[in-house]
Amino acid sequence: MLKVLLCVSLLLGGISLGATTVELKGRAAVTGRILEDKKDQIIIDIGYTVLSIPKSQVVKLLDDNAKAAKAVTAPAMERGFYSTSVAPPPERSVRELANELGEAVVQVRTPAGLGSGFFINPEGFLITNFHVTEGETQISVEVYLQRNGQIERKVYKQVRIVALNKFADLALLHIEDKDAPKFSCVMLGDSDKVAVGDSVFAIGSPLGLERTVTEGIVSTKTRQFEGTLYLQTTAQINPGNSGGPLFNLRGEVIGVTNMKITFGEGLGFAIPVEAVKFFLDHRESYAYDNDNPSNPYRYLEPPSRTKKAVSQ
Image (cartoon, rainbow, N blue to C red):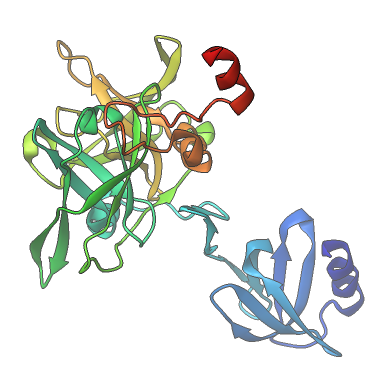
């Protein structure tokens, strides 16, 4: 498709004054008059026909009159339970991002303690740490909404454990209260593209202090504990932060905070978001068995011929 569009652009280059050049992935381009700039596509008149170009293929727009390029903010791409960005969003300040993303970060409570979590879609599905919910079935989630400059608290008590992975320290929960609205959610980024020294920030409830924001950098991407790699960060992590998101300056989750070294400062760790994506993509394999609350896995019945052989 891109090769065809490139040929059209070369044949009709500079067709009219005030035309706009749409630069596409793969170094292709289309020049014409934009009729409509929709959320997910651009409608452009190239002279003898009208094209509909998905924004996922657009790199930037170049106004021939102004000779100034502007980046196109790519829409989020839905992937089942969660969203990722088609193209990297622009970097913004921690202040702006924390204000925008704060509603998607929650406090997860159990009789044994509390932790943090974050919504991955509007339907009330959220991620937290396995150790936050370990051995517990009575779980509540407190959401913090901004209303007229004030924080409005709402507690949901009908929370179901959907999936658990003890070894990755991840849990997927779902709010099932009848009055539950659509929730603000976050996008998952790409921890493989994170570089040492990148600025990051965490939002969570350290020691129960909800919506606490801490800022730092990525100290290393390959800190190993018991055969598992973690992101190490100078963003302050404390008990209660567990299960909360670690964001980059594009507002994407790049990790799930889950531990710190208690006798040091600025030594926090997060589960890379690629592990979270794997967990979500294979959530059926980690489905929680409600008949056995202490068991994070669902075991299948053996084949009938095997049971018969055993019984004999």
